[in-house]
Amino acid sequence: MTDPTKLLMAGNEAIALAAAHAGIKMGTGYHGTPSTEVLETLATFGDPNVLLRWAPNEKVALEVGLGSAFAGARTLVTMKHVGLNVAADPLFTAAYNGVRGGLVLVVAGDPAMHSSQNEQDNRNYAPFAKLPMLEPADSQEAYDFTRLGFDLSERYETIVLLRPTTRVCHSKSLVVPREPEVLDRTCRFERDIPRFVMVPGNARKRHKLLEAKLVELAEVAETTDINTIVGDPEGAAMGVVAAGVAYQYVREVAPDLPIFKLGMSWPLPLERLAAFQKAVGDLVVVEELTDFTLDKLRAAGIPARGKHPSLQLGELSPDRVRFVLAGEPEAVAAPRDDLPAPRPPVLCAGCPHRSVYVILRKLNLIATGDIGCYTLGALPPLGNLDTCVCMGASIGVGLGVERVSTDPADARGVVAVIGDSTFFHSGLTGVLDAVYNGSHGTLLILDNRTTAMTGGQQHPGTGARLDGSPAPAIDCADVCRGLGVTDVREVDPYDREALEQALRETTAADHYSVIVCRHPCLLLTRREKRDKYQIDPDTCKNCGACLRVGCPALRQADDHVEIDVVQCAGCGLCFEVCKFDAIAKVIS
Image (cartoon, rainbow, N blue to C red; front, top):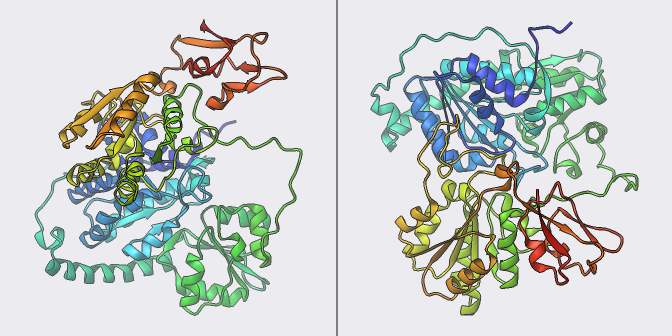
């Protein structure tokens, strides 16, 4: 019989439930895998007392969250690991301010870069910003640590960092929730200039208080039951220190080993860890990415060993943990021929971005790129995106290449490519720089009316908010005109002739130009009836011209090309390039 007190939940869902049960007044963040589902789940609860919002970027999300917490409201802020780089500016000073209402900042890590441009270890932010960090190992802990985070935040008037990683965010396990808190409080900002106005004289005093607070939090780390020993260390030949999903892997491959399980990964309980090391002798730190915990133990004079350098990159796994425990380098597994060939990610069939890359390649333009679905334009067969650094960098990188290019023709051939959500996130200042400094470059804004890469979330240009309520739809073309761009054009990327003509004209112009390529993401409209295409196998000459478009709906048969009618989105690119009239339009 099913136990009604237990819920099967993903880690992100458990964090959302815990935040609701903790009595939050506001949830804000920026969508980014693997953190996106936290706010989306909160939205499904439909609680009118909780204000939920997507912010244009992570910096704004944290700043809004700080205002909420300064006014005494419990607040949840969410983002992925690289998002904290954007929010770092307010984070470090806000550590001096402290908070009145509890503020838990969810910073989801992505070891192995499943959907990220780097796999930075955000544990390093905790000592850097002088803030406590909690690391859940499963959905139950995601729930419990979120609840604990709000308690710690209010008790010590500090932001609490919660760091789940991809496996915890998206894996499901049982959760036994507790009774929700009922908070009877008035949220009101009370003036306290020495605390909230960080001019040097005030900041120096607040810094001293922050250091004293860290001493108190170190005592919490020594006494909290989320830092615990699993197994008996007495007489053991080896002991392990682990946190998060690494703890689960150790339990799987070496269930008899004693483990010092860290739930609070900063500050570290150094006294208890020293005692644990003396009991076990050989202490092994099992952790993903950097040697964060290992370095802190060694700096404190606690003997310990970690993983071989060959295991520094990517996620751990049960197999990799075996090498860590043995103190050996990772053995390279022999290739297997019984597995299907890997399928790299591709733009969807009929994606409007495909036309853009076909034209960019035809005109042999340098394309400085950005973060989004369109980053896949770097992969074959499109292969026409030349850089990708971070959100908004396409514009700045393009400007830099343009300005130092010796040959004027090279300078004119640089085009920046950015999506609509990314443009609102961090593209506006790049456009300002271009206008202010007299750039002659071209910016392509690929406006597909959604944040497609993370699942179709809302942004300032979609006309809707997180809860689905209507919002002003900010037009990126109008924004560019407001920023001083005099040449702003709008084209449908399916109209390849118009797009090509626009690019030829803007790359030859003596002023900065913006082309908004506007067509809705096909995932928004895929249930609508639309034209599709089919190939006549008798007419097809197997020339391969259509295959070079890079559409995943096309596939090679024995002596002709076939179209998967389920995948076909009706964009017509294959129809346009066919030299033998073998492709015909049909109505779905």
